[in-house]
Length: 465
Image (cartoon, rainbow, N blue to C red; front, side, top):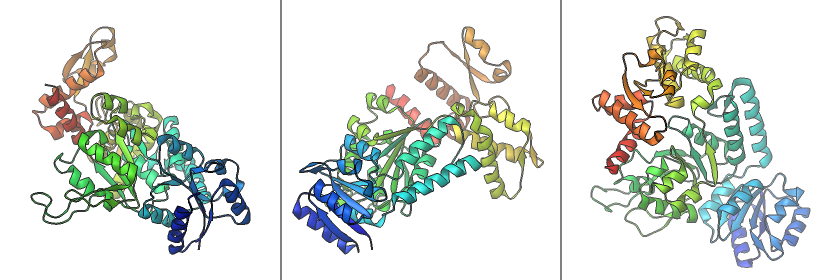
């Protein structure tokens, strides 16, 4: 049985929390000030501290700054308003979670069920760091480069907390893998991890998919449907490409993040939920706000702890390790072991990989299938091996940077030096689409992007007309 200390100056709230905690099998004592809390800590070190932010003799966080007895205690902040500033400050001081008054009973029950000593989490992180040095793996992620080590340290810092995370980076750079690693290192690891691609769901269905609906709420709703927030209860909900979510739905998402409750489509009854949200986008958040793709208030609520995934060309040292990782996975699935020759590894390392890690994985799959023997040579790896069929030829001095063999026999477009990158991207996408007779799947594969990303870009171009 665990022991809890409730530091709360409102006697009614303190007693209600003590009763709920006792019902979950914990012993509980209360303190109404920092002074009382320090006295209780000197008597018995608790497994859990529920700490009010505002107390008569100071800030609740002051208790964390000057008390050694909390070194192996899980601390949950209780506050009337979970501001971004409070969340960041709490993260720095090692707070595991927070409750917003009036507190959500399901959230409190979830916190009690996830109780884990900080020393246990610390030991797990040390094991992961040792595994990184041995094999180059950190959870689900692969690579020892400096940019990736920075990502690992950020994940290690935020995983054990309840802070909302916003992961940015190019398509194919591994945002979902990072989110899954955060979940697996968190106290929610034994609960669901659900990934939602906001750009791949019809705008007419996305509200129902995320929040659920009641029977009869619209034509075709012949039964009650539980949305992702209910199905991910106690765990983590990964909202990929969150900037593709309709603005009216972003308002409802903001409310869930602030109150911990939502309503199904066709219902007026709030549903309480205990879910950690990790969001991701391949857009720059501030630019998404400026273009109307993301509400500013939602950006600030999601961007409490930002993590940027580096593109593959920023971490070239990781390419051989990633290629070998993908090859081993393919060999296990196919049942035939093959190996990359030194020439193949060198050829892979020379590519630019516009589709990033996903692009590399696809090429490794292709050359595995094309290789006749047990050794994979470089004959199927050529300039443009990352499936990019349209090469941009620049005008002026920079034209010499494009190898002749890269453009020979391929379609070309002309790019002016100083031309905006957004315009270049548009020209390349539309030219590639035309090259493949408007076959979207082949176009997406050639560009090294997901089909969803291609649809999003084409939708943007259509709206600009």
